[in-house]
Length: 394
Image (tube, rainbow, N blue to C red; front, side, top):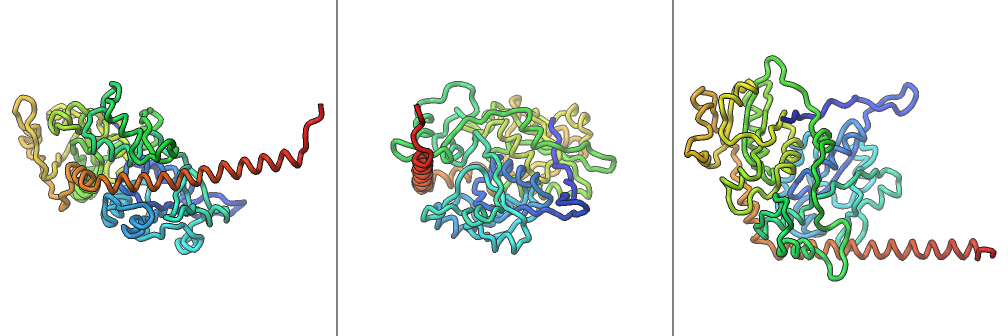
C-alpha cells in the first residue's frame, strides 16, 4: 500500500534578504509514450522551483526533427497534464528552447535530463539557454526508455517481467534497435530497471484519507499507463466532491493469466511508479487480489468500486471478481469516452515498426556525431594546455 500525491511546496523561494517571489521552471519535450522516466524528470524539475510549466511539441515538429510520434499531440497534451508535478502545460511549444520562450511564460530557467536533444541538423536544442545561464540539469532515469518499451512490444517476450536471463532474440534486439553499427550512444538504448524503496518514496509522498473523503477503489494492470487510463481515472475523480482514489495493481503473473501473450509490457514495479505519478490517484496497492473481497473493502473503508468498459475476465474459479462490491451496491461501470487500450498501442507500434527503428537509428547517429565532436574538442584543449605548460623538468 503506497499513498500518493505530492506535498504543497512553499509558495515562494528566498532570493535574498526580505525578498520572496515564485520561482517558475520550464521543461519541454515530445513526451511520447509517457513513462515514469518522464515523470521523474518533471518531479525533479518541480523540486527546483515553485511552479512548473511544461511545453509539449506538436506532431509536425516531432516528425521533422525525430520521426513520427506514437501518440497524437492531443493525447500527449492530456497525458502530461495528468502528471501530478505539472502546474501548467503549453501546447505546441517550439522544438528549440529559446530565451524568448522562457521570458514569454515568465520562467526563470529550464530543466532537462543529462542526455542531449538535437535538431534535425544536429544542433543542441538548449544551446541558447545554456549560454545565457538559464539551464539546469536533472538526472536521467536509468532502466527505462521508449526504445526498450517498443522492443518489448515488437518481440512479444515475457523477459521484461522475469528474473531469468533474457532470451537471445530479445538481447539481440536490445543490442541493435536504434543503434548504429560498431558503436552506440549512451542516451539511446536499453538499460535494466532496478526498483528501490527510495524511488517509491520520491513518487509517493501522500496523506491519509480524511473525514468526508469518498474512498473509491479501482483495480487492474494499468500497463503502459496511457491516455485511456487517464481518461478513466479523471471520470472516476469527478464522481465525488472529495475523492480519494485507491488503485490496486495486479502482480505480473496475475495480469499474464488474464491477458495472455507477453503482458504485462511493464513489470509491477514500473507500473507502480507510472500510476503513482498520476494526479488523480491517492494511493496504490501493489499486488492487489484479482477478486475484490469483503476484507479488502472493509480494510480500506471503500465507498465505491469502479471499472471501465473493458471486458472483465472471470476469476480462476469462474466467479465474477466484482461480485462482492455488486452485492453491496457500490459498483459503478464508468465510460471514459476513450477507447484506447494497451492492445491498440501495441498495434500502432507493430504497424509502424520500420519507421520507429529508422527514427531511433537517425537519432543515435546525430548523438554519436556530437559525442565525437566533444571528444575532439577535449583532446585539442588538452594538447593546447600541454604546449602552454611546456615539458616537465627531469
